[in-house]
Image (cartoon, rainbow, N blue to C red; front, top):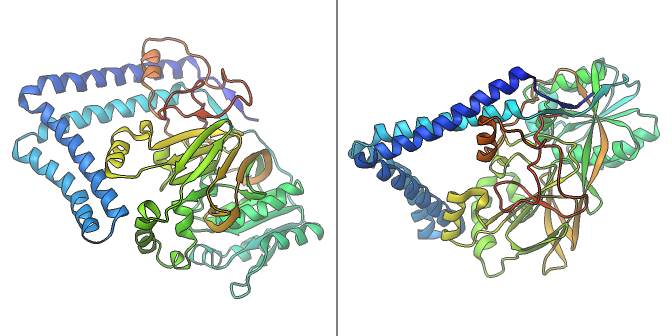
Length: 477
């Protein structure tokens, strides 16, 4: 079973040592900077910051405008970092810049390692699973560029005793109805080999009937499977759960009565995915639409109430089934450390000019243009009768207000015992915790909260004033 496992004395001692090394490396960075003042140390820092600002401005011009200003933005975004490197080489500052970079890199590496070692490990409760006798798996042969056929998933599943419903790409089917029919015929497990949107539809049926659910990562990105720790490089390994599996209970998101396993997007991204041409050429479609969506005359803004807190005039809003480690990780390989935390992650964005883009680049999640929170209920409104919504990447339109909630522990997921993707997420660096750890000070356990249940949303650390202690990050389900 899971729970909280405290670190032993050896782990605590190693964490304290790493924290002290991080503090020393940070002091070393300052010493190098002071000693290098006469040798261009301030020029290195100033040029680096200026290059970052100009790059952010260039990216904004490129994304939010067309024509000559877009071309200029592309040139500035590329030229700014190149100019910084040329300046360092011309003025003989490359060695100072390299030393500062190495010192700060070591500081962050040691600080994160110390936090990982000092933070109590919390694992999602796992229990032994009963081998299903009448498993039914729905498979989409087109998903993920044909992974179902490429990995022989139909044959493998049938060898293990499962019944496979293979979708016909030429005749779109209601997968939720297929799942309900399977339940009516006696299925004791439902599973999907497909994308996250299809996974969510069948997961809702499984949760409705209290059946275990099997995820086979045959989609394109398979973000849900990644956060479950499944092997995304070989979907056939997911089927091992049929004979040697264990069960975890996780949360299931709900947006206006529709289930979601990953994210619900409102605003700019949701408007882009509505376009039919988006599936064929995502990048070109997004670039063609962005100027109108960000600055056009008919641009729409979103308002939201996050538990008891109002957010107004946002260009984009993203609600996730449990929060991500940081907003920087939402693209690419971002991870949610837990899927059973009982909270929604909320990310709101408002950037309307180059100055705000530069501020966001410099201050990150402390910028007023970026709001990062957790909550139990999010209500999204706009000045129209309905708005575009992207649910796990699927394009929909919903009448306002659109309400997002979380059904805690609603979904039973059958996973293989061997999950190579389970990893400890990299925690954000909190210098007060690092210093306390280096000095041997005790801290309040991360699992305790000072906020009372239902007292409102919590801002994540690094996004503004916090109403309670930082969330505890876990090692994954």
